[in-house]
Length: 246
Image (cartoon, rainbow, N blue to C red):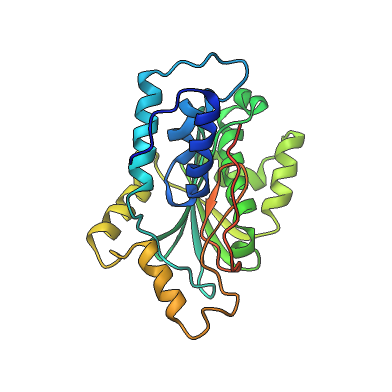
C-alpha cells in the first residue's frame, strides 16, 4: 500500500512486474492492469491519468487482500467458465463450485479484429492451454455465454484458425455448455464461497499444505503461467514468474 505513484515507464514496469507475479490471485488482472501496461509502450506518451491512478490503487488493494481459493482434487471433474471482450480473455477454473484459479490476458494486435465467435473460442482454448496439466485425461465442462459454440463441432464451414483450435479441443474430454451472459454464474459462486463454508484464504491453505506429511514430496503449492494468465499449480514445487501480456 505504501508503493508511491510511478513517475515514468520504468517505474510502471517495476510495479507491474511485482503485480504480475501474483496475478493468479487476481480476477480479471489483465483488464485492471490495462491502463498501466499501455504506459509501458514506446509509442505512448507517459501521462498519468485518472484511469491509471484507479488501476494503480485497485491493484495495490487486490495485492494486499487475501483471495478466496481452494486446492484442487485431481480425482474429480473440473468446470471452466470462459468469456471474451474487446478488453481481453478471461477464464475461471472451478471444481465443485469452488474457484481454483483465475486466468486473463489482453488481446494481441491481430485479435482485435476477431469476430465475437472467434474471441469466445479463443478464450476457451486459452483456458485449455494454460490448465492442460490438470484437464488433459480428465473430465471437464466449459461454460460460455456464446450459444453457437455449443454446435461448433457440427459446423461445416470453418476457417483455418477455427479448425486448428478445434483439433486442440478434441484432445480433451470436455463438453461445451451455454449459460446466459447476465446469469452471473461465477459471481454467484464466488459470493456464496465468501459467505459460506469456503472462507479460508490461499495463504492459510499454503500453511496447511506445508504441514502435511507429504508437503515436501513435490506436490504443488502454486504457479503462474505466461501472457499474464494465472493458475494454481498442483504439480510444481516452486512458483514460476509470469510475464505480462503486451
